[in-house]
Length: 141
Figure 1 (cartoon, rainbow, N blue to C red):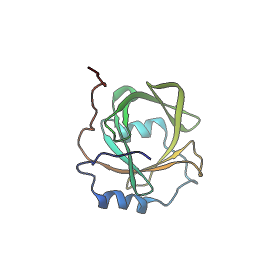
Figure 2 (tube, rainbow, N blue to C red):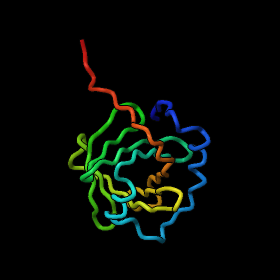
Figure 3 (cartoon, rainbow, N blue to C red):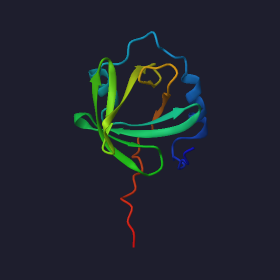
């Protein structure tokens, strides 16, 4: 189980409301790369799972991203579209793409891991309009 930092601007009400967005939309096709880029570029989105804060991702130009599990450790990555899914590759796992099907519910994104109904499903909590916290590299004495 991960320990999460408290997130200013992401109140308990918002996190508990994540579960209310939950009607799964498996019958609808996922977002195209163009739609995903238009929706996310320039934003910092917080995601939840099962009513709990899960992580945050900053979406930059040229399909670059920065991800954190809300622990202050950030990973740079990139994304691309493959077979109707949005796949992310991060610096610490360059040969292990993480592919998701994203759907826009009109009140936020739903992301289904590898389009598998039994796998992780994340809900967009909100675009809080603030930067994510990333600590510098670990240093010793």
